[in-house]
Image (cartoon, rainbow, N blue to C red; front, side):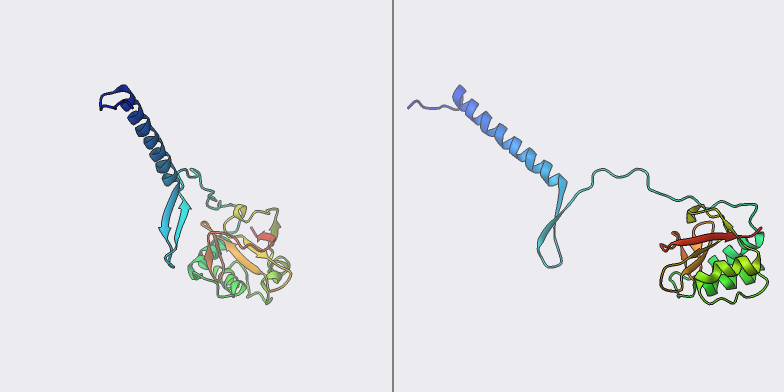
Length: 187
């Protein structure tokens, strides 16, 4: 068997092949390590999660509500009052808070008598001169409009559209997930 010296072409070829294979294997490990984040959970078990390298550059953002000149300024004032009096979380008294805002702003002449929020639409139209708008998207409701929601069970929900969201007994950036009965306003 011939001796392999450090400078023999055969030794250099074998060494080069080994180094090349090792660097390729290391590159694959680095690539796969970049795709997963490995960590230990609260129980001490090793877990991993994908690393997000790309993001959605445009978030879905709903614009501020538009001011409609046909809406009564008293209703716009009611929206401001409702937002000022609203809490961070629901008190399950949405119709009570909306009634208070409507009365305080002068948008209605007397305190509405209905108990349930889902009955608000009928009373506002028949007793206070409100009209239903042809709006099906709560985000497109003008500032000051009253949005009435109902579901098969329960009292329903009512809220006033504000410039930055919705207000009743609590304020929110998003509308109620319940089915929308209608959007009501008066000029």
